[in-house]
Image (cartoon, rainbow, N blue to C red):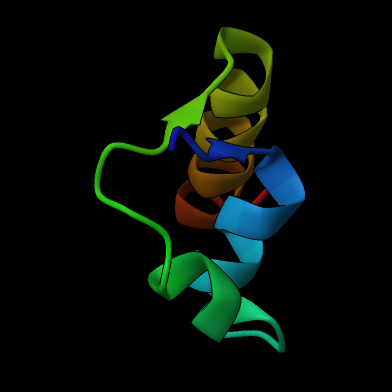
Length: 51
């Protein structure tokens, strides 16, 4: 079974927010669309650069 992640789920996991345990339990073969991945990268860069 393939699990499709969205940006909010992955961001919750990366920030150890509520619900991150659900993402942690997903298979390693999970997928994310390029649009959602771009949002995760943008949020990460904003954190690193202080935006």
